Amino acid sequence: MESAMRIAKMAALLGDPARAIMLWSLLDGRARPAGELAFAANVSAQSASGHLAKLVDAHLLCVETQGRHRYYRLADHSVALALESLTAIDPPPRARALPESKSTPPAMRFARTCYDHLAGELAVRLLLQIERKGLLVRNEKHFELSAKGEKAFAQLGLDLAGIRRSKRQFACGCLDWSERQFHLGGALGAALMDAMLQRAWLLRVQKSRVLQLTQKGRDGLREAFNFTA
Image (spheres, rainbow, N blue to C red):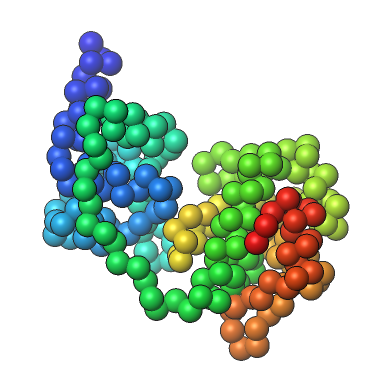
């Protein structure tokens, strides 16, 4: 009976077109603010807030806070699988196309600093590749190095024992404001960017947060992580 009630509750949540569109808009893995989800579902900000609260309470969505902003994303991979499975019964809901941001210069969007670690498209794609290779293992927002990861990062000259003695988090996901996905933060993320700068894989652009990826960096990332930038 308890399982039946849970299924009925989920069905009721998904039965609302606005909530269905909001969930579907997050299926690409990106996190989005309430305003974008309200636009996609064509509802008011107040209405969107109510819908999002219900989806969070039901553990279908989770909230990431980045500075003053709150971003919503699917709670986990099982929610995405359930949503995709529903398309076997009926086509996905139609959402209004979200407007593309034109305010961020391409160089800033590609690679930049986020305090003391790498951010932007390059950082997000690099973290995904590191995970695919099994070098980092994710537990919600936190990461641990696998045995292969220990070896790979040590070969880059990172003092992993020293990094672990740091008072900050060892490795964590930091939500990228332009890509809306995680890049690598924490002490490990800072050490990785520092190593890339020391090896001239990255160059700082004067009076800017922009980072330039060099050909040496492209070759180094390919060799270290089988990553093509």
